[in-house]
Length: 112
Length: 116
Image (cartoon, rainbow over all chains, first blue to last red; front, side, top):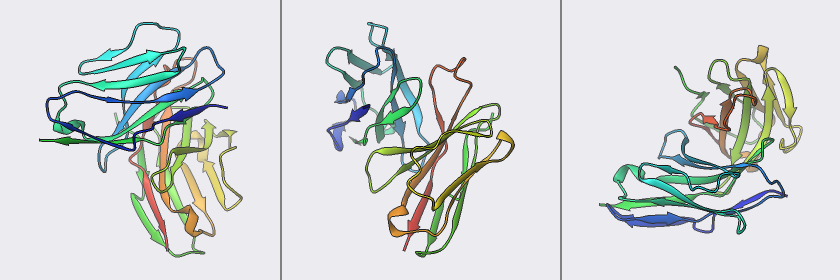
């Protein structure tokens, strides 16, 4: 069975500081994609960052980076220099080339 | 390029009534997915179209839900009759052909359904 677990329903961070969102997953596949999607209030979900399972190097997109630990099945998202616009629901997603599996989401609040 | 659009953005109906949600995917995207998020829980898969064909409808909760994708373009999801537990946000997403896709899904803003 494929599962994605986000154990932090809600988190807060001070503007300009760093925050890490946790995600663990379970899959029997050896090749898959992992994503972090962001949904701002009343807006559509957009892709933040993507990681191919066969790549050992952690993906980075500007202020967003991941810590991908394949053996531990862990995929955390680090947001550096947090901005007010980062406030959103963040979903960790597993794609096994057949289906997408979503975590329950982490609501990130950014304090000015 | 227009993104994925969904209509209505919010629908409030009474138990027993019918509601039809519509999704217009990005032009040229063969894959169209419907998902549902209920009461702040995880997003659950409902079904997957490849063009006009239902590739996987294993997530459809029961026969009160009917999805169609006319001519491989827009899709509708009808709930008839609606029950209280159907309340939630229904997301539509689309993606390109899997041979070319890097896995990215493009989402609509969701249709919030409230059943009273």
